[in-house]
Image (cartoon, rainbow, N blue to C red):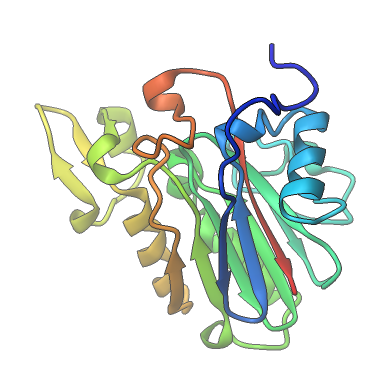
Length: 230
């Protein structure tokens, strides 16, 4: 089990950071930052690397529930929504992309592995904002964080039958299997929900040596996608 604080003897890695609409920033931890489920690692990443004091993160159970950041039931949620501009919110991931959907007056973030994507996580993120925002989805923006890329994500029949996946997001492999591009699926789901301003991180967790991939390296480090307003 990893220690309670990151290994500071490792070579420093430049933080993965992005800016997008409505004065929002996003950051993604690296393997060198340690396992984000550990309080010490998470606190060091937030405070020393990206300059935040706290971040609201759900426990994540590969579901589709989006909880309000003030909700005490974050333990059974895979997404967080808030209208408080002072809060940072985040989700963990070791291959599963995180998706941020933001209006001018509120924002939401969700963990979008194949189960959550098949179950309609994008829909639930959008619905969580509809209940808070005074602006229509056409005025919102979205960010799709790092995740495993299509050419490195081969899936089997149970995944392929979980929903009607967009044809352009699938590349046939051996019989009964295909390569699935979750980023493409999430982008299409966002557009179908009326969110057209979409930015992609363009970072593959299985192809970037700074990151840990569960699919290709096994269990271990879990990274975190965080978003906040400037």
